[in-house]
Length: 361
Picture (cartoon, rainbow, N blue to C red):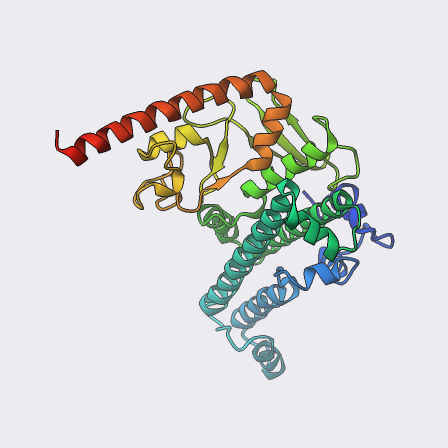
């Protein structure tokens, strides 16, 4: 996608949510990103990490200047001094130090953004399902404003936040590959997925989409809410949730459990981001349903990606579970009945074995 098409997609998809009425479709993304950071959401963004887009571009520019100096036999002292001023880390025959700093910083930023996004979404969704004193105290802090409108606004800002930074990372990595004539930027994106910091693959986006659909009361959200539209199709053999940023930018998230190959029930996301039914994940980890996923041994691997230690960070996808309960009531009731029966059976067998062991029969 060219820069112009991407910028138009940004404009049509979600910039309207930040009300940048003076946004120019010809404006460079760096300027757009700067406007976003200092726009209406500045107070929100001051509490969150973000991609240091301009600083990372300087690293790339300094690498380019250094390489030009090394390839020129008669560059002159002035140009060499300019190269030195651009970056004290560059070396004319190698950009290894620049590369190390570039990717190290980008990794840290992506990790911080993923952490901030997940914690803010977690807090928002906890509020959504909470009641009683916690909800009352929250409304008191917000001067008894309409809590649903406040939550929707928070959700919109979080979606702006994660997609803006995801696009910034994608743009800077493409620029890196263009300048260096390499595929290291694409490899880094693969590394981000392996380290579970690829922003648009976060299971918290699925939770946020389910949160929105639960609010909207239908399978299709209203245009303009949460950028363009969240939608889900639960009737097909391959149920999916779709996040549409523009006509040319769509992301689909499968709602199929990779173990039972059915629509996920009582869904949990492991630390690696993969979704499973609770009963399927417990079975794969050799733990009982009533014990829960966090009781899985440290060395248990994800059934899909084989990552180790991901069970301890498992998260219950409460909004997605609520969405399935509301949209596929008969399926949800049947799965609930089967899961409860299995839990009772496992608990009975477990305590019988514990009793036999205790009395030494």
